[in-house]
Length: 366
Image (cartoon, rainbow, N blue to C red):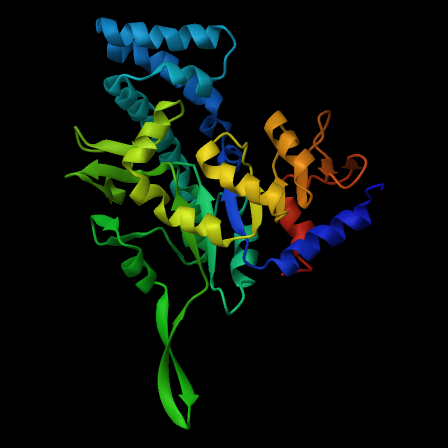
């Protein structure tokens, strides 16, 4: 069957109508749309520039780091090259350098996004989704491996309510029950001719930052959230961010309760999925979702700038998954679903750009 624009628009709009409360996963692509320095290339250069100065004269660390450098010179990507890092001291330095880089970028863009002079590209998209949540399910589960806080600044700027599981004052700790109180209210209703109070929730986002965040730290044997430490943590305070490489799985196991407990439950209950700027490089995030897309034929949409072999492999097996991405030779759109013979090329639209996608596809829908 030949794929047409009419088929695509109807199918994707039907997805949003039929699935008003999907699970959304967004990745680095959403941050790179603000500044490409949020991507792996900048982190690669920053690590290679900063690490030698920090480990100078420490033979064991130098030996391990040299394996990373040799791997990079051999054309291996940064994530795979960092698999050579096992020493806990070296892991801490990778975390420090990574955190400092993202913190510098965060400082550059935080106020611009908060005051609206810079727009995080998925802002309107999330506004449409939250506004369209059904009364029976007033929370949108959103998952991201990003450390930066661009999404949070955007949500604050436009008034999207969100919680991330932390509760407290200057120092916040994981307590989903208390966090949920911040989006709860009592609604007055009449029942049996009597005025009564009914507990309800504002429509909101539950944000799961599964690789930690710039404002999360390990202090006194627990994970805490402190906004005043974002750009310059106190000495000997380590950020809780899960950096690339095989060591991330060990780190995740250490902080599984704080980072993944609610995420696991959200994945389990959802049967429709949206991926924004996500490259499918984190097995612990997407493996169960991929199984649901393939084996249970759950519905999903991938909206991303660039396709890759991992995405193509999933697309070949998942009957109800759509891919919207950039054409290889220009900035226009190509769209694919396994039930159709070939790609649909749209030579006047850039629907892989989430801002344009929102205006073109969702403006008549939500």
